[in-house]
Length: 426
Image (cartoon, rainbow, N blue to C red; front, side, top):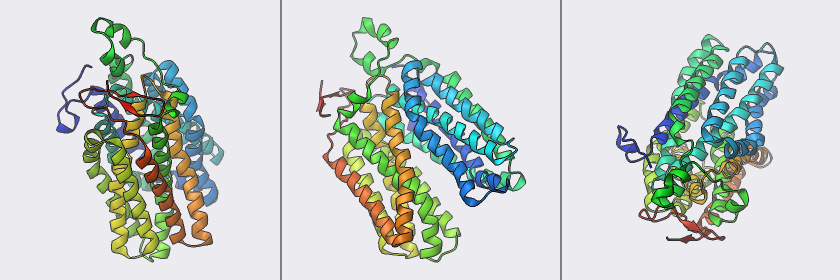
């Protein structure tokens, strides 16, 4: 595998594509953070209610979910780089046009189109990352990729707030420009990854490696689901979507202001504590995943997040809330890296559909979690909502505990997996 020595210890020994994908993730996340504060306000400017304004955000998420599997099929058919650049291009064009919207219906449709492009980008980027990095570095690479989104997610809203105050349309144009930059980075610097499969090149005879590198195979969904490790990764990713992308975003702000009776300021402080804890733990978590194993990382991460949610169900004290948010960030770093590494272990060659279903599990959790937790909070209490969410994470912990370890020995590279997902060392 051709490797590029990059400045910074974090990228040492990793293929160049990892740094490129991290740069793309930062650009995409900054742009999304810039436009996020403007979307509901822009929708409301057309005279619609809060529900209709929220539907603009839901349209993006819904179209991401329903188009993910199709995006995976395109990845398997045409390759990651082409679909990545195309997906980003779709989001860029639709976002720019959304900024020119003259009515609510145009904005709603264009954001839905952007969701399709976002699914194409997410699936292709993850599939490429899992394919070009070998088993001994996959956790670290996944952690770095996630850190790119976190960095962008922290920086973007700061600029987005100022831009939204100046103009409701300007953030859409800035997001479109950032996406064009991200797509250009991918199109230019990912060319060398188009036909490279480190697993097949590693195991093929030396005189056949050039031929193998041009014949990238694909892993089917049936092959992936035959492995207990993949099934566990899908379940954990569903729990991540439920708790970290769904309930945390929808219920925490209301919990702070209504149950804890605190100022909105503390919502931002809590989210900042969680983001900083996750960003600060990602590199360590990635190395843990590669050195100790995927299974213990998934158990630890799921358990820590479950306990953080359970603590919110038991108390409304501000110090405990902040501690729980920090814990959820640390746990999120572990379960944000390990399940993806498992998917990469199971994949042989391209796995667009395999990655798509994995991503869809998270989106499904983000859709279902807020609905169930919101109903419990309205019907019973916030405590019931957080306790139910903790139960989902405890189930993910149990599933992770029962899965086989998919990490190969560093000296062996990739594992051979039996039908039940057990590792056989070469």
